[in-house]
Amino acid sequence: MSGSDPPAERVTLTVAPAEAGWRLDAFLAHHLTDYSRVHLRRVIAVGAVRVDGGGCKPSYRLKPGQRVELELPEIPREGPRPEEIPVEVLYEDLEIAVVNKPPGMVVHPARGHWSGTLAAALQFRFGGSLSTAGGPTRPGIVHRLDRDTSGLVLVAKNDQAHARLAAQFESRTIRKEYFAIVAGAPQADRDVIDEPIGLHPHHREKMAIRRHDPEARRAETFFEVLERFRGYAALRVLPRTGRTHQIRVHMDHIGCPVLCDRLYGGRARITRAELCPGSASDEVLLARQALHAGRLEVVHPSTGERMTFEAPLPLDLLAVLEALREGG
Image (tube, rainbow, N blue to C red):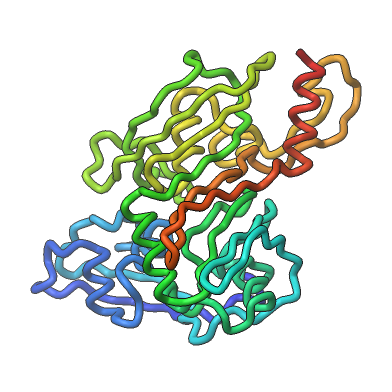
């Protein structure tokens, strides 16, 4: 735990006879009423909960006398402290804003990332004009992107707008389009990947295709090849559901992991020489996953107008494309 993290609460619980057969997440939610069941499932997923010294899934059924140990960060009582961090605002009105998140920025505070977040930047930029529906650590945040994914993030300025936007995400009427560069080349020029995603059975940071796991959730991703290179491809990707790491897991599943995806692709950076065989340069062109949320279509929460927003490709992805084209 870093020095900037709030102090953690160490908790030890013993399963009573009457609690035999309870799911682990339900057991924790019953005893730790200050924390939501969703939050506790996340805590379990990152391996911070041990049952008799071993890790377990949220659905694990408990036995009498078992010892449940966990370490929980203090619940933030206030929103993130405003920080003067530059943030590119592409659109703003009285109800919503759309920002272009740079790669490397965490969207909202979480364990190990309590400062330098998009939420802190938004607090500085918009002050008190943000929704509170997402809780104290997520002012205005309606949805999120992974830290190393760049692109469009929709921000709500009041709770009514937040609720209406969240309903669009829930009903899948918001259209999200990503640009990705993958290692390898899909066989089809366009296809749909329909594979359920759940927690990885052994790696606490990862998700995985889990066809026979009742806890897994249906996930569907459409992709289209925009350009093919020697050993790589540029894709347009439209996730039809919104699961954690969905595009990254699905691309890896078909043998074409997102380029420089450390978690799923096994490498974190790539040089010009690796992309362009004719070059001898060891310049690192990319040091994060090649994934960009470039287009977003949404119905305005007040006017009902369907609006489309676009964020241009960042310089690092443009540099990768240039090198790939040079390499043939």
